Amino acid sequence: MRVGQVKHPWPVSKGGDRYRRGLYTFFFRGSPHPALTVFDSPDSITTCTRRLRSNTPLQALTLLNDTAFFEFAQAMEKLIAKDGIEMAFRRCVARKPAAKEIERLRKLDSLTAARVLLNLDETITRE
Image 1 (cartoon, rainbow, N blue to C red):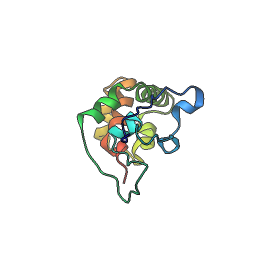
Image 2 (cartoon, rainbow, N blue to C red):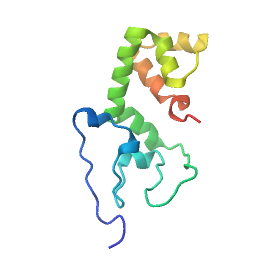
Image 3 (spheres, rainbow, N blue to C red):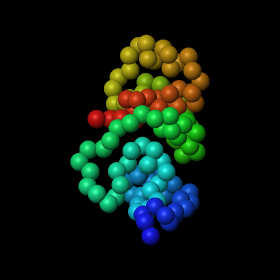
Image 4 (tube, rainbow, N blue to C red):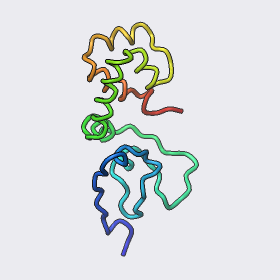
């Protein structure tokens, strides 16, 4: 039997385990987690000194349509309502926002602003 022939289903975890980091995700050798595969996660069989980087439409669609990512945006929306756009911006990209960035974000409703912040390239690819 070749690797990849047996597919393991990925049920959605319940409770606090639902939002655990990918670092703690159990890897099934022949059936990696779909979201990790989309974002160039290395396989668990070989060592990885540097991750591959790609920019594909599947990544954008996952960030926009996956239930977990939408729930992250809803939590960020609450943070914006409580602490303001500037603090949410700092939490996402770890820097003070420029005046033009704040101006553009304030024109959006809070959920859209949250989704914009979470989907910034600067948020996704920290180096």
